[in-house]
Image (cartoon, rainbow, N blue to C red; front, side, top):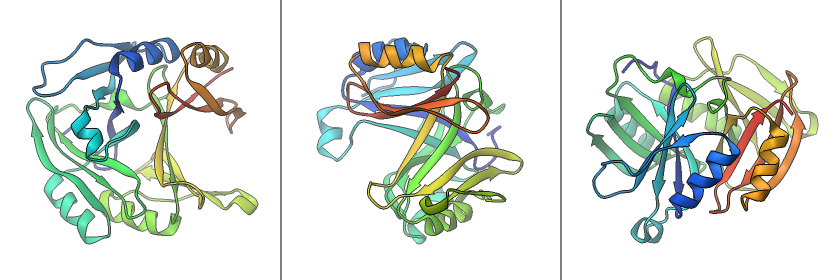
Length: 255
């Protein structure tokens, strides 16, 4: 695996209407999303930014939905040893929803949720030079990974022990609490924020060329803008929305 432990190496949309989601995100983000792949037993589509793959879309079938799956953006965190990570997740209060599984040509992975309930994958990829194109500030890529959690202290203890993330700096939000940044070595990959009135979830921010243009595409495509646009430190803007299939998404970029 070319990626360091703790780096995000893939992003995935789980959706009950993959063609509808494909049309929506191609218009909103500018991705090119492929036709059905040759993965057996599932409809899976690759998501492409202008300069490389970002992730994939998985069609949720009735069996998956009956088993508890729902529309969701979810990230894959790189680890050196998937089986050891699964054991650590279980030992520290997390939950494993899909045990270690080999995907030919891709790697070994498992799906879990942290002790507060936020879902994520762990994965050791088979690509030796890694998948560094999935994280960055270029259009179509993920620029930020944000955890909204009901127990910020507990979440940090869990992930720092599991994948080695560190929290060398924190920004006070006053009465709203602390915004605690997450690092893999010298790379700042996101932050955590404590909330008490909503389920724990990861939120992954994808870069668009224009937030205003994205807002228009969201509305015309049948989605909703739930928050924003808000300016963030550094001069960019963000929006939080819900796609027509029910998955929450987050975008960042210039107005």
